[in-house]
Length: 300
Image 1 (tube, rainbow, N blue to C red):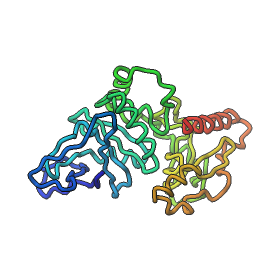
Image 2 (cartoon, one colour):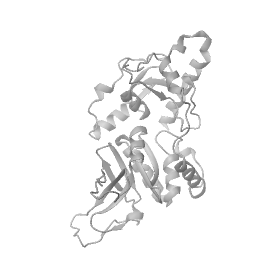
Image 3 (spheres, helix red, strand yellow):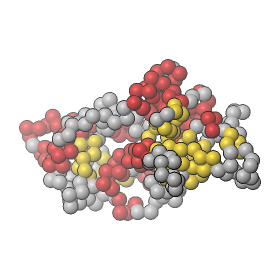
Image 4 (cartoon, rainbow, N blue to C red):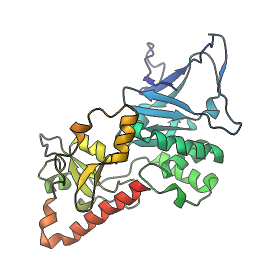
């Protein structure tokens, strides 16, 4: 594993804008020596970087980069890292010109990646098939055990489809409707200051995700990130707390600082305006169902 940093080439236009990379030098490797990674043989080899600027791990295909010269780089683009930071998990092509996969993920998803990487290696997946594998087994998504499809066929199709369109179209008024329901305040801490955002309960990337107002919660940026990462849990009765397992994993990994500042201010979220409206019982029922469904997906 190496440090992943933004490209700082002095010559203008030498590298694409927004490129991040690792530069590989093995212990004892001289400037004229070829380096190599041990791959195959029944074990899994990982090629990783950690980007301190964005706070995510980055993983490339080790087999595709098994031999290299002194200080040879492996690159990816900033938008993949930022998506991994925001959602906790992102998989796509390492660049627009290659089918080689790249995964960016938050520190609390490291164990999840290690497990998936070993399984994918055993299946011999690479390129678009591997991208599809990682996308359909994201921490918030279908359970891997429930997907009985041929990875060489169906998963590669899923991968190609989602690489071409990583973001789905959203209702432009969804955010304003949701924030109005919560009086422009974070439902977890009450912060306003024009900083509140609309978080989807079931993400729009999921087949059940919709832009209906009952599928949204108004949250400040910090609690929005915590909610998207399933660090902050909301029960169907609006009880809210930090997930104990994820907190323990963050603390074990040395990333537990600031948890007191992210803990919700109340035991229950502020309810949306429609929650107490007798004419909108259907919206209240749908929101409870969405929160229950989110819990099921996160557990899987």
